[in-house]
Length: 454
Image (tube, rainbow, N blue to C red):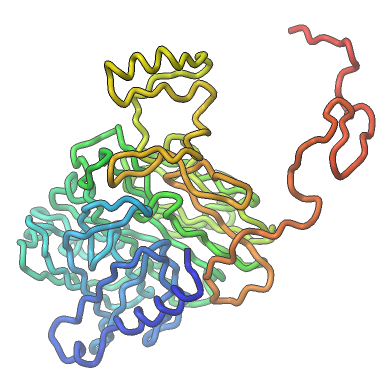
């Protein structure tokens, strides 16, 4: 989450990392690096056409320089260490210090020049997923270009013809390199700043890892049995919230480079899919949803009007994807009567044996069980009413009154108006609650003694 101090510090750090005049004199622009896992403030354009910058969840946008009409960026492919959430770090591969790499933002019609330096132990190449460009710039190693050997720098040059939401990722040894976290968002803003304009524009990428408890290196050949489902290589409670001002038009751009689809569900609002990695969706072709399925290798841009204040979860609706480091071979003890003496006896034969879950797994969110180093509990994080009992692909959209237009700091828990929070019934048999008297029979309920027959 972005505290006030972290917000100011991050803004200063980003300004300091912008490409300087010294770099402008060099042949290749500097390659700014970022190691923070905190969501960085949007990087407003300092030259070239105007646009509203995006906010990369737990990430950042790559600074650029203008050079004789070309917008120049510099990506460095390299090993990185990423904190997935407090208490666990992973050894991944990424770009410029982070995985996923920084978001690249350009404007429709820009002439773009992207230098790519390879500091990996093997060759690589970068594919600009969804961007229409000359074949030789498509970034498929061995097919459209030679692979970029370790220690070498290649350059890609093209014009961004269409605005929209795109990605970049390797097309060299992609099973390993994407499994290690090499990916990033590529956003092309419309030339007309009023076209598809929104007030807040968030982006994140979905990736999945199989990292055994106590380890820090992903299993790169895993196909289905992942245990860490991430947004921008972070899991809840490590994923920042998304602060929004009431009345804002909000866009979320969600890219999926995992091995399965993700039905992303948002509470409190309906939204429309307004864009894919193939461009914008015409208004006449949209329909309201509260869940959007994001298939593999696809981007969905959704938009909604933030007219309902509160703390609204947004998450993948596959329940295992809102869990962390879950062992999928766990025995099912649901409904089993605990027998402490038997458990104690078995534990003598199998040290560490502990039958859990006879009343469900919610207790695990409150227990402070000692576990292997460098791993995470299945579900963690606290809300203002107790354990959130969520992990993985989960965050909160926090809609508030009276926020500044460019304020992205975490506003804290929602101050619910009186009488708007679900609460315990004082006398269930009388239907009486703590805030209102019993009002007799429930409308539509069958009379006493009536039995249903099917």
